[in-house]
Amino acid sequence: MSTLQADTAVRDELSDVAGVIGPALEALLGTPAVEIEFWDGSTIGRRDGPGRLRINSIDAIRRVIWLPGDLGLARAFVMGDIDVIGPLPEVLRAMQNGDPHAKRIQVAALPKLIAAVRSLGGIGTTPPPPPAEELIPRGRRHSLRRDKQVISHHYDVGNAFYEIVLGPAMTYSCARFVESDTSLVDAQAAKHDLICRKLGLHEWALRGDTHGSPARMLDVGCGWGSMAMHAAKEYGARVVGVTISDEQAAYARRRVADAGLDDLVEIRIQDYREVDDGPFDVISSVGMSEHVGSARLSLYYEHLYGLLADGGRLLNHAISTPGGSRLSRRTFIYRYVFPDGELIDVGESLLAMQRAGFEIRDVEDLREHYATTLRRWVANLEARWDEAVALVGEHRARVWQLYMSGSINGFDDAGVQLHQVLGVRNAPDGTSHMPRTRRDWN
Image (cartoon, rainbow, N blue to C red):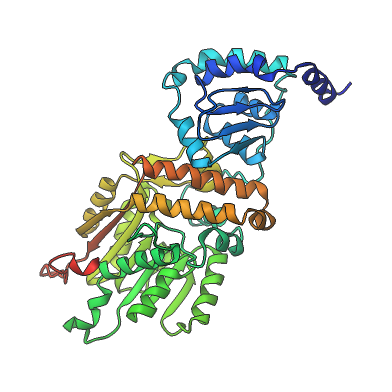
């Protein structure tokens, strides 16, 4: 008899999986904050929660035993060994806010769980293989080659998939919802316009030292070109957008051509470290510096400072977290979403900007807006789930569903934030060309 047949025979003899494994799981995790349904239909946990977990096979438990914590659970979800019935963000929040004593008893309870799983057919001699969508990058951290590999892993999964998630705005960063019922397209346009106005593009033609010439703008990490196109179309800026994603660049170039903006917008496949044709009057960096890392943050700001003309402004728009957070290699976000990603404390970022020579002129936190943005993206994905699966496969679609749903809670509870920081490279005499108030930005 094969191992699989033996496992099946043992499982068939057990009519109540919850009775066998439930006490061990409760000792490990505390009383589940949501109902957990096992593959035989038996259940444990609260039935009045926002939803339930359905464990489809013993492989889900095996994954947690071999890799306790966030990554083991994520692998089980991505592979379909676990399903969530109900709104995923709310179920994740309930689980996150569960038994506060669970972490203290986890190690002591693990042998009990292992014994229970063995009685259900064994845990196997090797862990179940990880999904193919998992990545551990190779090479020197933040080298040009490794950064391109990491960016390609995340962004080069097909533009059609991003069209589903992001919608017509094709903007993969926090939107700005002036009203709660603002559409995602309008909210992304409002975010782009806020950045343009903070950079002073609306007042550029009135500045005497430019003689009315259009502003020259660098958009670092330009994505699918939306920020660059907005600045060109609405304010006549001459924009250079740089990305190291081949698919993003090809898509952005098509959009620019279709909009008739070829004379104003140039899209390059180029790392920001390779840009050497300054000076630029303004620089926007939207959702890009999370990929830089704290070790290279000073070099990042020094390079951008060197690309600006006197009086030029930089708007850095980035996710941050108090105290900073370098993603562990044993986390879901690192392996599946942002390998080498790092969330930097806004204070550290401000200090690095000042040391590079910038004067800090404005700091704004938009974290509630990002929670709303993520909810709209999740809704887009779930509304066209079958199309998304046909494009990228169910495993990758599940990665995105889990990543975005979990991130909603991070922004809701202020564990992560979204800061826009405006800095200026003053002229030698201290002239900044900054307005006296924020009145024109709103």
